[in-house]
Length: 315
Ligand SMILES: [Fe+2]
Image (cartoon, rainbow, N blue to C red; front, side, top):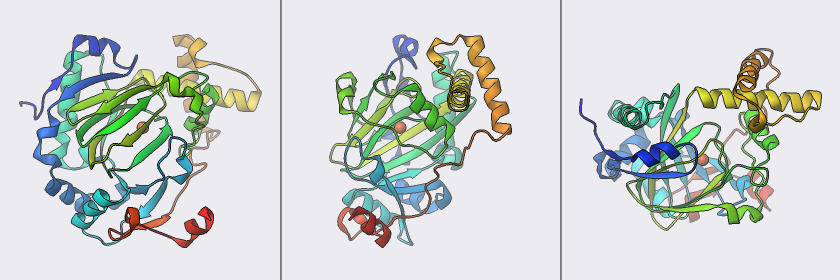
């Protein structure tokens, strides 16, 4: 079967993949799967328990302003209008896993990337669709898995930082991995001189090393991207080692560092993390933030009607 799209992925890109931020080109931006009509269909038909409607204040450190909203009974067209006019960020999680017409994208990505990098063997791969407003932003954070951003429509600026004790101490990486719903990442403006700044245009894809801190600002137009979260065994083992180290640090007062641990030691820690999970020493549900804090309203400023609780909290 021929692929639905092509990528321009050089040998050099393959060598640097996961080692440092890399950019390549793809032809997904020309697909009708991302037209306004297609987006409206997706917004209406995607399972709502796999959809996030969020808003935020715009600032690198403003993770606390990130909040989820209720899309209500608005049509897909009204919600797309709200994104275009307001400040919203919609994540249709697992779009490329759920809908048959989008599933081929993940399949083709895997085939083409493995063709360039034989070691590319994800044990899991999820492709979500991000649709976000001209003024939307994503504050400084890390992702738990490896990530690729395949940009399709609009313009956005991405800041990617190396992972080190200044940008994000290992203890904080553990804190995020230990608590599934904890996304609080301390931001220090002094790290700005370490950032790689990339302006993304339709047809560009980008990836960076595991747990690399990053942030995003949209540059004045509606943005559409596929975000692929994937993990291979090296990432599973590394996360397991972080989780084990986090528990050794917190419960036994030790001071382990993943970067100083050899592969065998990391593998032992990965195995231990699985045992610890079974013993429920890892509290995967801690810090869970649930519930809507606003209602999407295409006619309001930023397309947001705040619930009273948030207005009181913000006051
Ligand atoms: Fe991210």
